[in-house]
Amino acid sequence: MKIGIITNLDKDKGLKVTSQVIDVLTKENIEVILESECENIYKFSDILITIGGDGTILRVAQEAIIYNIPILGINLGRLGFLADIEALEIDKLITKKNILQAKIEERMMLNTIVSNKYRYLSLNETSLIRSFSSRITEFEISINNKIFDIYPADGILISTPTGSTAYNMSAGGPIVIPTSTNIILTPICPHTIYSRSIVLTEEDVISIKLLGQEELSLCIDGVVRMPINKNNTIQISKSHQKIKLLKLSNRDFFEIFSKKIFKKGDSYGNEKAKTI
Image (cartoon, rainbow, N blue to C red; front, side):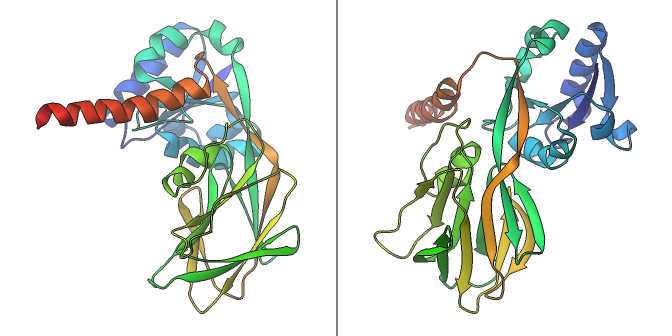
């Protein structure tokens, strides 16, 4: 078994956690491959361990999906819905036995095609957001080749269930269990009273056109990919490819959500109250 380690150097300064993971794997007689020492870590690894936050996993997922490699995330970030374990759990959970018996959770991805030419995969969301203009943009939304509505808004989010706790949640969208296979359409700051998120099925296909002269940015999992204007058509659907996340912990989604959202909010409120 060969395990590749990809570290976010901004999160693990001094490589303290990375060194700990290397020591643990070496003691378990597992071969370790480091990103800095391998030209293509994805090609030669059976499993990938990411050390950082969810952003690190999102970046790695773009390549891991090509080689169909499962990812185990160690969270050093703020929330960490994708990362399975915390740094304090490394010695306890990362054993050869646990890895061999680990559950693999498959997560749906989105396929985004721009003007029948450019193709992107997203694990969290595909978004259309303002580039330079502060004007509200009108988005013509079609579902399964039928015009559904025109949204006057700052932007549009199309997210996976995995991404429902990311930008979608901040924009007021619904929380969806991450292992489900829905597509979520959420307007960003819609300039209308009735505009709400729509939860679609995995079979639905969304098409988006801009009605106006504004230029927007197409973002895939938070990374700007290309400018979009009224001459482009964006089509978004469920991808046939799925990312694989390795699960060593026994925590389920509801426990994670409660800990990272509800209890985090309570602890913040209590801490704030103590300082007044």
